[in-house]
Amino acid sequence: MSQNFKTTLLSLALLSCLCDAESVVTAQDAKAESTSATRKKLPLDIGQQAVLSRFDRFEKELVQMAEQLRRADPERAELLFRTHSKSQQERVIGQMRMIHELLADKNPQFGDSIQRQEGLVASLVTLLDLLQSENRISEIEAERARVKAILKNVNKIIGKEKDVRANTERGSDPSKSASDQEGVVKDADELINKIKQHDAKKEAERESNKPPSENNSAKPEGENTEPKDPSSPKDGDAEPKDPKSGDPKDGETKPAEPKDGKPKDGEPSKGEPKDGQPKDGQPKDGQPKDGQPESGEPNNQPQTPGREDLEEARQEMEKAIQELKEKKDRGKASRHQDEAIRQLLEAKEKLEEILRQLREEEKSLTLASLESRFRKMLSMQLLVYQETLRLDKESEDQSDNLSARGRQLATQEEEILQEVDKALVVLREEGSSVAFPEAVQAIREDAASIVELLDQGKAGELTQTLEQAVIEAIEEMVDALQKEMEKKKDEEQKQSQQQQGQPQDKPLVDALSELKMLRSLQLRVNRRTRQLGRMIEGDQAGAPELRKQFRTLSGRQLRIQRATYDLSTGRNK
Image 1: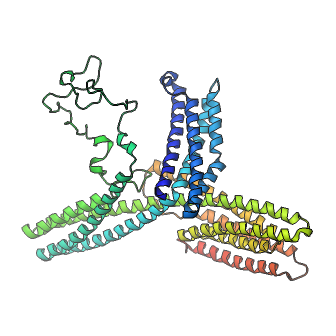
Image 2 (image 1 turned 135 degrees about the horizontal axis):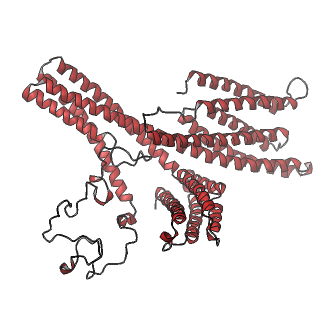
Image 3 (image 1 turned 120 degrees about the horizontal axis):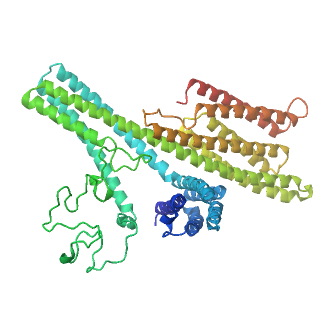
């Protein structure tokens, strides 16, 4: 079993828990309105207990799989551990137990339980986003590169088609215009064929990865899954086994099959969808009519957005060629070329929209991943700080033991430093922020100094000051990332409600958050300068570690100045 498939199974397990939790909320709403409608269903407290048991098993499997992947795939193991840590921070199990207690009471408190259940669903969604972030971000990057390449080719085809249309309107030789148009058609054919091959490949992958249970997903709720008795057909059977019993009994609602095999007036043929609806709840031929993505799932559409527009544009080009070759009618040919350009521009708009959606999804996943990573750093740094305080209080008689413990703490701090480096790579590759990478770089410098001091067995005032600064900086980073995630959710809700225009591509964090981060960086430099000044006896720093800290602060101040300039001039955009 591949590691990607294992992670997918975990995601499906968590998604199942999420669906169960949402169903409990729905059941509580229904019961609050009509208790008689839910008497035949599973009691809510038992349903909540089932969700709790399933999530408990999910957490155990999460840790087991992380342990198995620790050596073979440390990056994915780290993601699973971070997901488990996030679950502990969100107190998901505790929330489920509290809800169960509210529902198991003699007088169930539906109002409180519904409110808590909504918070629980939000926590589960956060875990699911984090668990899927690694693979999804890679998929988004690949899809964005593909769509950008398609958009580039579409722009070239638009330019060529406008040139052909201009020559046609200027009264150039129809044979020459037809030849030029055929060249544009050839380019369009190559692009359409590439898109079709990709779409067919993705469709085949979806079918091969579809769980076996989805084959029976079209069955109505409550249908008996036991084998049917051929002698006793049930409602919904397409053809009764006994031709004599084809007519429904009194009181039954099953429609009778026509004896001649033909549909009644207004009814679809056998096996065909009714009232224009796609068969088995799926779009015709597995493709949406206009190629538009589902809301909130920009990369899950069966076909590439704009593909149908490209095909229609190609048809208009063929009609223009026919008019130029056979009828020598430049007027009609020009109108077909105008329509082809219009279809190409529509394809361009859809491709630009899918790029924007992919970008927004990528930013949300990046923020969630960074927030989880910094939370992990914070817990690790707090442990190192507590051990540093204990080490500083130890007697000087145990110098050998203290040195060994200092080296051990230095190793732990190096692990934090590795996490900082990973976060810094993510922010720099994203490229739209200037203040946040600088804040992480400052954390990295302090962490590196802590490693050096602890390795030398120094756990005094300077080491503790640096550790406190790292803790404060990480806490501020977590808070800033949380606020940005909340802003993204609010913006998505407003956009889904308005549905007007196409907002411009926005950076990972807004300008106000960047300014706040730069201000915090400057305040920390000022405070560190005063702290170091109190450690100096006289006018100049004598200790090598203090002189090194001043040089670090000098470089940090210079970078803050550059970041402020880049932000003010828009060089990060």
